[in-house]
Image (tube, rainbow, N blue to C red):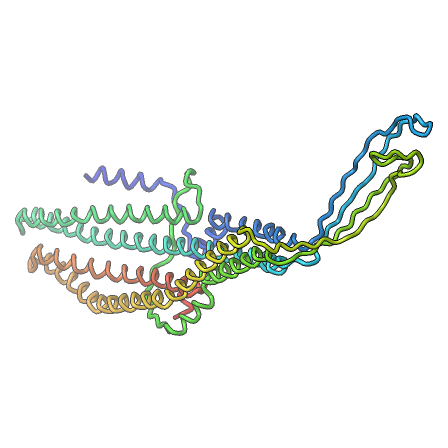
Length: 435
């Protein structure tokens, strides 16, 4: 048994160890490398091009072509064949169009939507990375706590073995101590697996290359507990004003409203100015179908005019599109109202969680010192034969339970504060700013 244990320790000692990483480094790596954030950045660039599409309705349309050909035949005694070519251009400028104002606003809103979508992606991914970091700290400390208790139990096994060899106790005491020590092995292994899983989740959030031989990140720091006081009514107002998802929902409502106005512009008249020009550098080229011998030549010219259209009878195309856009706007409005209504409930739930965690932490604090003193006293009495193995097992179990409970309370508070930061729309102002 000792030989195999030594081999395991030696094998673990040659494994590559990743440098410790802080929470700030974790968030920065996530911000720089996370694929969801990178995709949202690309969508923001696409939104800038989409805005140009919306704005294109105000700009003139210019077309140009260069026809050419050959003209010949016996006309007025002339048998010469002439090559010809000319430049023809056309310019159309919208003069009156009810779709222009909402199109300009819609283009600007498109960029704002993409910006808020990027902010939302950043917030979600950083939140996930933060939770993964806290989880890794918790599992690491829980593994360490159980390792320390297993070491205490192994010391008890050694002590009982010496006493058994000296004839001071019977074999059952040594056997019971061994069973108690080995009973903690599965708990330590579970904590190790949970820690490895948390490291993997942390590496995924940071977009680390999991195919390489680079070791998984090792979190640096400790989970701490601190008293937190929150003003619910004030924070609700802050959340309604600053939350990214609510800002995005409001923009979607505005976008749907402008979409409806753009479609409804089909009800109204529109006017377009036009300018066409032909430039012909050659002379003596007759118009097509001309029978005149010395007239009706093609020459350079400029023509201007305006076109006015008004569809006074809707065949259902515009009306149906307007109704469809209006229903989309109403759906977005309902989603916005739902988000705004849930803010108070969500913050109240998190506040209640914080209060419950505080009560549990205070209760554990009062019992932790007593549990530690009791465990130490029983361990000393066990060595002198004044306490039984059952008393020792109960004392150690109580001590581990209180220490694990305190660690879990610190972890749950940090997670709840991370949820609070996101729910109030001040995610990048970490929990220390509220203390």
